[in-house]
Image (cartoon, rainbow, N blue to C red):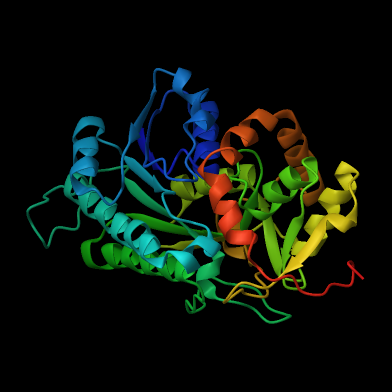
Length: 360
């Protein structure tokens, strides 16, 4: 039996990972640390909290005292760090928040884990750790920057982030790497493409468009909508992280992608068609600063070396995702009726609309 600390577990990917762990490893103890900021939703973990082997702790990963106390009490063998401010738009408005959580918070987790996992924590030259421990940093393909019309991100590419969000994630990745190189800490870093699926906060493209369609609201699309992303179902992401935890070579980085390159406007039109709505709902708005044009991930390393591959086709994943949001409208309503409503108004109401072929 292992004790697993999942930070940011009340968020989208973190909560899905907790449910994945509970199903696959029912004997493991899972501890969730989450500050419950705007994207953290305790309602998402209602079913998880029914288990006696699950504990939720409200706290900030940048709070050293809280993290140290949690390590003393729970003695986790594994840390999976999802905790992060993660929305690019927000990072443009409030970059300092991203630096505090994504960089300082990651360093605090690493430092406390090092203290508890080293065989001789007082010896700065000691690089021997307790058996079975590992720190896994969940990162993003955005740290690589943007691609042209061809090519894919590979793990050996230089990091060239273009937004405060991706810069903060790249910084965190480098700190994780430094703790491995300097202190010998057993770590892995995973960099995933765009996720979609259940429990995603409705500021992200797919749940935003689904929710707005259901309420016959405008569908705000940045620029010409031709920004291309590689889409990965969150269940596939969870299985990939699990694979890296158990099979990944210590110190290595693994890209996780779904092999589904789609333009944003393709996604929007698919949702409109599925829900039987009109394309007239689409409103093209001024593109955000530093908006990368194309991402595409090469997942050859994890598929060939570790034997992982995505199970979902994009069509199957989108069908299930839309059905989930249709079946869980109350979950969405509880979010959009709160602080998010004010944020949404702030982000989209004052953006200049631009001409669009569809509007013409």
